[in-house]
Image (cartoon, rainbow, N blue to C red; front, side, top):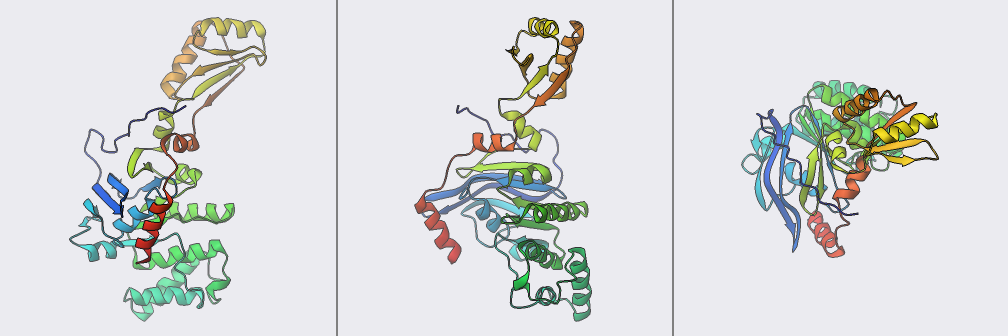
Length: 337
């Protein structure tokens, strides 16, 4: 059943930590289709921020704007302390970008790809070789370093892609659906790499359609829908926004079950399973309150489980199916320019 959800503010009431990425009123349209309709962002340094949304919601457009690949139609943004419009070169010097499609050149080896990137960053030959060797080892690509990248698996190409991004020592990395098409083992390897990057102080701006990925990695998550941020918060905060959470109590003794049902007037009963279901947001406060009520009545449940909505529930509740074919066509034409 449809329901209304008010966006959660990422601003809070107290002072905010320094932002690696911030935006106010960011707007972008393709033809008559508004893709970003005045979004605000505040991403603290050294954190993982995940942007979720359906296909065509504007996730890649947001990444392209913030990484200076395309310009916004309106709004203001700062990346690494630099104004996006006034100092795009300074922004580019501070960031790394890994897009949906690998930037690896399959005709040359993994090592040659790395050395080419070192040349583009104007590193000396010695420094380029040292950094290449270090990153190839860090990303477990030493054995494949001398082989043409065309023969790499999807996971290896993705690892090489991120290794190439790190040649410039960026403090902010934009990862646009970095694990799309990877098998579960390769995806988990990528998660480990992302966690290691953040542990060194790197900020990661992640777009993904894998809700488990956002749940595992992100400190904060924003859900983008129809050009606006529908909600933002930690994974747990977002889950608590969605109705359907409950605590389930199961009993083996029918008399104890009936006593519990009498004591807990707000519970839904399941006589066959000798189980009670009590609406709850899954918070520690509500759980403690329920346990206190059971203790006061001298009742002990044989089994207690807490059920909370997951990010799938959040995603489906907050998003609609978009875009139209004409909007996709307009964006594809813009991307091709």
